[in-house]
Length: 431
Image 1 (cartoon, rainbow, N blue to C red):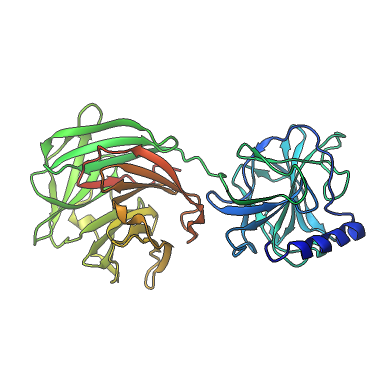
Image 2 (cartoon, rainbow, N blue to C red):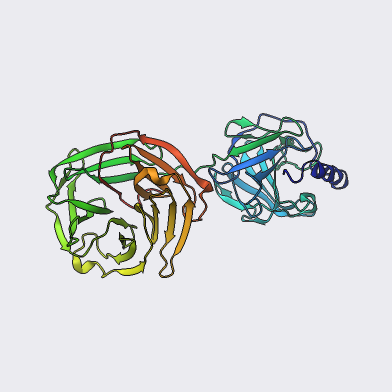
């Protein structure tokens, strides 16, 4: 909106007179607490211009990405309006209960029809510039309304309408005209559910097991440590399921072992390692929870198919060559045929392995070099093992959109104490 300040206000004022839109109104009752209607972690600029308490929103830092940006519900509710308006363009209104309604104007597209149920974070449309009062400038015009007359909706867009001040993440906006808030970060973040089951190997060859509550990031079990050692020097590991781990030996032969865990409750007990075969010289392994084992050796990625929970060598395919140039420091799988890794210089890269060619999505350019292990139990949840032996957690609202603006740090599981030399999470245990 740096490009349409005074000029835009003048045009909007003219349109107000001509169309009866975007004027101020007296506040009604206290507004409910909402989250910003954009994916978790994104930053937006909010302006009242001449129509407080309504807000116009464009994406930070320079409005790039506003047009076509995903719009999500700020709270649970039911769509009660979804139509094209001659002045406001594509419009959606959501009933959040208690007499409160949110209204969205100028949308490029509407994803939902009247009667659709939404939860916080449900996609409801895309930001656009439809309708003449958008002035052809992509932005979201947002209003919170209170149904003061009890007719089952809230009026919007004109002086004397039922719009009131909105509150996002506990902060209220829209008290007066010509107010601006920069870099408002969306906390419209999904809460992951499930338990991350993490196996590890200590420097002396003993195995560890730890459970982490994905919602809170708190350890709920362990670390439980075995008294028995593997009996060989491990190189890479992947967790197939709750009781089965694959580990390669750090040797020229590249031996691959299956570790069958008997219990990981109050003690960690496993059967003697079962040798599956040789030639597995991979520095990194990851299993996607859906028959696919990925291995990287000297930058070459191969995909193996495993068709049973307790594989022998005959249950593992010979390995499909995906490509070279996979010079990753860490590797994990985020979903079926999706892998994620970091580089030594800090890049965070996601790959969709849909054959050759594969799809490469670079999420971050720097800063992830501090992690020597990367784990994902699914659901867009990532755990990064820091070189200082701390464990940190992240949430990617949409882990496969190629956009890191919705990737948010959720804090620390433990600041230290994770001294394992290898770590691997059971896939697909978190939603």
